[in-house]
Every structure is written in structure tokens, then in C-alpha cells.
Image 1 (cartoon, one colour):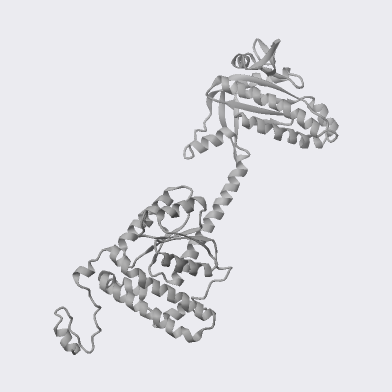
Image 2 (image 1 turned 90 degrees about the vertical axis):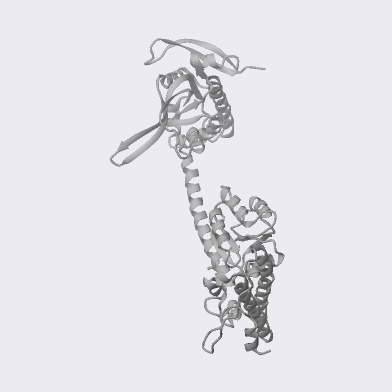
Amino acid sequence: MSQEGSDRERPDAPPQSSGEQSQPVRAPAYLSGADAELRHTLRTPLNHIIGYSELLLEDARDRGLDDMLADLQNIHTAGKELLTLFNELFDPAAVDAGIAESALEAPADSAIKEVDNDAPGTEPTSDAETPGGRVLVVDDNENNRDIVSRLLEREGYEVSTAENGALALEQIKSQPPDLVLLDVMMPVMDGIEACERMKDDPESRLIPVVIMTALGQVDDRVRAIQAGADDFLTKPVNRGELLARIQTSMRLKQTVDTKLDRLKGAQEYLARFVPQSVIRQLEENPEAPELEKTDQDMSSLFVDVTGYTKLSESMRQTTDFMLEKYFSRYLDSIHTYGGDLTETSGDGLMVVFPGNDPREHAINAVKAALEILEKTEELNVQLQGIFEPISVHMGINSGIALIGPTKYESASGARWTYTALGPVINLSARIAGVAEGGMICIGPETARRIEGQFACKEIGSKQLKNVKGDVMIHQVVGATET
């Protein structure tokens, strides 16, 4: 039958003229309205033909099999032409909008150019240009996973795969990748839900997610954007576009990771100068930590080196170095029992033990003091013959004190310190002055709070400097046997 007769038998056939371009073929209404799942099912094997033919073309060129290039190119071109026809049939709106042409239109030799190492703009990236890293490819179709994986592995990426969103999340949790390529339509858990869960998890939200969608699926893109996707690829995946988008996302992630590592390093360094209680407040309420001075019940501990003046005269420059060794060891005990180092001087430390339980923080202060005595003896033995042995004496007092940051402002800037103020603090310092080497002396309030927990003995009432009235001093001699 002639073409003219054929057109007359088709009532929907558009008129043709010698100077008019042929109109795209339209499917019957019941086919053009086919749902997304059917279009996905029919389009997938065509994408496989295109993808595998591209891999074979690249293999043939690498191995010098020039006699096979023309046939492989014909297969690749036929696959693309068939896919174009499919899109015209099932996605006419996308074709009318120019989506299909922008994604698929290419010269007849485009397949060779996509794998031609000598073609400008498409040559493989060098090691210096490729960020590298591990990519997780998530697709329910084994051939799709295979095609993309082989392409990425040739470019030097480490690739792992998962067949649905649920399995992908398990892999991300156990071995986080640098980037995730995520299909949309999958069983068990689709790509949109998997992306949303990744972005909701603080541990994985910074991992770039590239969503792979079918041509013209605008709804999928909108849902993916709402779920937090970082980028998109249209199937069939174009080799050059895939690599470019992955490299861009990888570079961005590496930049973010580098900045985060620097911030983490700075945070860890600055944490050395920040009391543990402040760090805990920041962790509990990072947006608006309560750092104002407040009246708090606490126990304060003063640690002084016995005979410091004589020691510094005999050891001269090595005194500070030696005391750093001892004080550093003391910090472990202080932090173990919830204490904060607030002040230091050449021969001593000031530590506060805040807390909601008055008895508990008093007990913790005494426990820390007892450990400090033990560690002093241990270090004296370890450093015997290197440094002179030292002795420390301590004073502890409990009660209400004003605790928090103090800001000092000057023309050159501001400086913050964290300390405790009040009569309770002054009294603990005076009590430490009463103690002799190897002694832990405590005030009457601390003695009351730790009763039954430690063995203590009365030293007697003492008149302390700048303290009104006599103060009963007790000495801690050890823990009560249970």
C-alpha cells in the first residue's frame, strides 16, 4: 500500500507537504497515559542496550578492535533512536517541552565521542582532576547497577551497590560512602524515602545524594528536592554528565569535610581551655547555653605544693616542667569526679565540684583529693633520681558560691575566664593553708556532708586570716571501710 493510501486510512494522520518536517509519532491515548511504572519497565531494557553498547565501544577502542566500532556504534545509535521514539510515544508533553531533545539529541557519531579518549571535552579525567572516593549505587535492576559500577570503577572510584533503599541505609550506617547514586522506583523502600531518611540523620545528612530519574518525571524531581537530594541524572545516564556531576559533588563534599575537620581540630584544642561543666552545657543546649554567673551549691578544692619556694630555688628552671607532669596527672582524677579546674598558680590548683546533690559533690571532691595523694606518691617513685620528690597539701570546703564566666574588657579586646567567687571559696583556700604536706583538710560543712563515707579526725578550731570567728578543721585520713 502506498504511503498516501496509508495516510488516508489513518484519520489522525497529519497532512504532509514536501517542505514540512514530519511530526513526531503520537501513541493512542490509552498508551500515552500509561503510568510511570509501565514506562519505567519498558524503558529499562532500552537503557541497558545503550549502556552496555557504550561500555563495549570503550572496551573495543582500548583494545584496538577498530573493526568492531562501526557495528557497536550502529547498535548504540539504534538504541538511542528507539528510546527517542519511545519518549515521543509515551512522554509527548516532555518532547513538546524540549526535554527529550535536550537529553537525547546528538549527532550520529555521539556514541563514539562519548568513549573516545581523544575527543575534546570527554577525555577521562586525570588523577589530579578526579577527587576519587567511594560511591554507593542503589538500583533494583542488576544490569543498571552493573553498567554504572563498571563505568565508575574505570574512572578509579570504589563502588558498592544495594538493590533497594533499606539495604542502602544499612550500608551507609556501617560504611558511609562519599556519594550515593539513588534510583527512585525500587521495592521495599524507594529512593525518595531513603534520601529523606539519610538527610534526617545527622551522621549521613552531609553525604551527597544524586537521584537518577526517568525522562520527564518532574514529580520525582520535586519529591527528591523536598527530601534533600543534592543533584539529578536522567536515565539513560550519559557518561560525561554522570562523571561531571559526581566529581562536582565529591569536590563539594571534600571542601565541607576539610572545613569540618579544621573546626573539629580547633574545637578539640579550645576544649583544653574550657571547663568540663561549660562543655556539658554547650552539648545540652548549643543554641543558647546558660553561661551567666549563678549561685550554685558546690565543693571547692585547693591543691598546693608543700615547700614550693624552697623547691623552686633548688630546682630553678626545671621546677615548672616537673610540676606540669604532676598537675597533668592530677587532671585525670579531677575530671573523673566531675571537677572543673578554674585557676592555676605556680604552686597550686583551684578546682570546683558543682552538682545538684550536696552530698555527692562533696564526696567527689574528697575522692579526687585522695587520688591526687596516691598519684603524687606514684610519680615520686617513677621520677626518683630525676627530680626531687614533692608533697602536696589540700583544703576542701562546701556551700553556695557564684559560679560562671567573667568577662574582662579592654581597648585591645575581651577576655573570658571561668571561676567561682564567694566566702566559701576563700575559706577553702585558708583551710588549705592550715594543712601540712600529705594532708587533706576540710571545713565543718564538708565534714558534715561526707560523714560515714570517710574516716576523719578533728584538728581543732583555728582562727583563719580574714575569716570571722574560729573554724573547726577536720583531716581526712581515708575511706571508711565497708
